[in-house]
Amino acid sequence: MIDFDQIDKLIHEKGRLSIMTLLSTRGEWAFQDLKTELGMSDGNLITHLRTLGTAGYIQESRDETGSRPRTSYALSPAGRKAFQEYLEVLGEIVKAAQQP
Image (cartoon, rainbow, N blue to C red; front, side, top):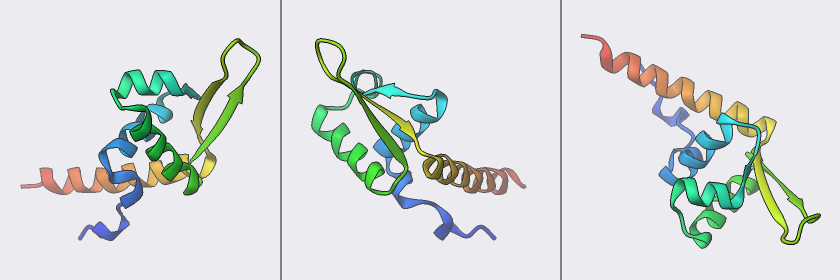
């Protein structure tokens, strides 16, 4: 039987799941790229990024060498591990649902 308590509720929320998925696809995403890709408002995206950052799931870096500062985000090692565990639980759910 699947232990649904293993689902990371912090990741499971739609906005944060979207962010974690994108961050897992490449090393780093700039704030503006995340905003454009996800269609989120600044405030909504910042709120989700702060939540993920507080949990230690993402890392923030700032590049202030250009005319405008650029903030980028990447999964932390803990975030990559948490996301992998989340996907494993989802895999178990899909496998169970496909059994006759």
